[in-house]
Image 1 (cartoon, helix red, strand yellow):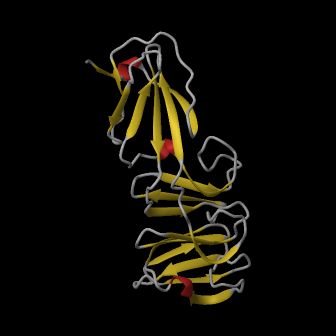
Image 2 (cartoon, helix red, strand yellow):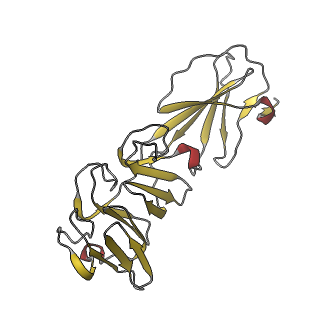
Image 3 (spheres, helix red, strand yellow):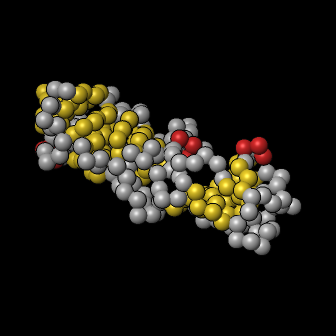
Length: 241
């Protein structure tokens, strides 16, 4: 065995060939063998026999496994959606976790002299998971695009979304994520009749805006979850034209 992880009363291990074995308590299907029977010795998980398991993690009563091709599977207790498959039903066999491809969010950046709106659309993006970690009743995943997702129990804010809500599907933690997409659209307020739009590299940490003084602020309707953030004037890069 080259890898081992423990849940509350169950154990998961992976062999050098990438085969997964589980044993222990299985009242909620956390062993993943298609039933709720306990096993006193390591039992190979046939449902993932065609995959090479590269990482495992055990929650209180649920289990997550990551394969070498970046696919994530979960099973076991799912009362709070910690398995991440869109329901709250316990699963006794591995189910693939699907990441949202149509999630969009926007953010409003403003100071006394300008107002910007940032949009980030995640449609048609394939997520490849590289790291996983189970909490007691929630789960975290890290993707190759350096985005962090969470799901499951959120009553104490453990999901990191600024709210106390349970989630049964993955949701990106904006504060911990780095955009890995084709670009971000930066749009100024419509006080200035010029378009005021620019495309910048996702890796940049600043917004590019015209060197104009904007009097007042304009309310703009945006799609997705909008969050306000103040940007110090000395942090703004001026573009002269």
